[in-house]
Picture (cartoon, rainbow, N blue to C red):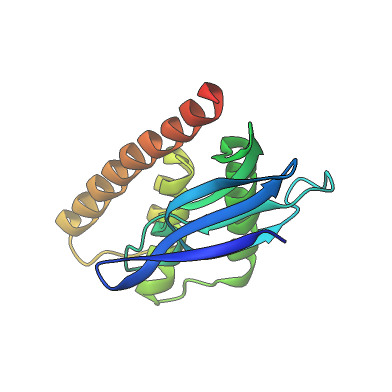
Length: 167
């Protein structure tokens, strides 16, 4: 397990610095804002990857940018592939464990996963089948918000791809 050093910024301890000894030399492997971090072998290759949430937005957990980092050139680089697999697996589990009924919170929680993963058509079908909006305007407004959310998440996924490729 690597040495972990927390640094403070504006009286908070949310900025994390990971220092590891590699080939006899201490190296800064990660430095940034991260929450709920942990180590796990996500790809079953025998080495630990680093997981964390890189922002602290409030709301449903699915709105947080969960990210898996893999060691590349002696630093932790976000992995698009591992992060995508993790979120897809998590979504399958959430779908099995969460019923909508008339619970708007559960409905929003599930639709947010469709948005995060960019599953526009499936998400629209889910919205139409699982929630009775009292007014057509409410449904249209919700759909617009859903589509805007997808666009934001597409940018996020693209940024992960670029970071992975550029390393």
